[in-house]
Image (cartoon, rainbow, N blue to C red; front, side, top):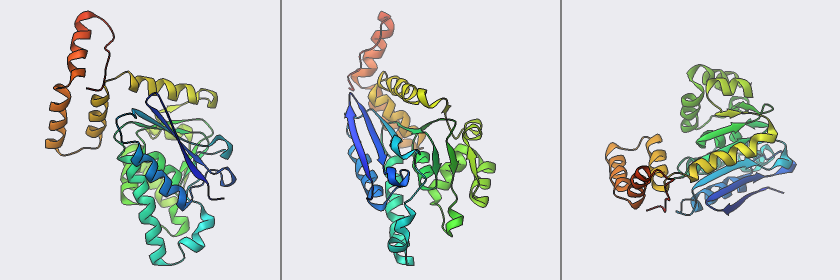
Length: 254
């Protein structure tokens, strides 16, 4: 079995699950393609926030790509480059998702699993989680975009250690350096993720999307156009009125 990616939606929250328990949620090539399709489908206005996790039965977020496929799918330089292009497309689709993506990490988050988590906006983890990008052990290389995200989140020093020595770091160290936003007991992970999602849902949808656009450092002209659009919308007027009336705003996405 090559595993699958499950997608469900309810009340503005999309859940994306890496489900490959026989391989501890290792990501097969078919799953990389499913991830790309899943996140492409979540760009519509009905989705407000995405929760991304490994299936609990796999006992890991993901240890990375499914290595059992490598002899067949990466056996030549051309095949390896084609494989890398498809994983890169999936990762960039996650990163480009216009709404916040929260990665719920419980257990190993290694290689391609870490690259998936790096493409998310917020990472919530449990103490048994570990993080690593040991691609040099496979005589391979991470995508430049993934390296830049690792440096931005973990810092240049820790990123160099992880990349150049193939070292994995425990959850406590990942949290201390900022790679992880929240660290807590496994039994609290879902609750904290839901509470975080609810804070996103309580905000004006277009303003949230604009804030994420700003995090990705678009051109100044594109961002300013988004600012003008948000300030001309019905939600901006509603927020102002709610402040004056001392009540919770009722956003409609306008």
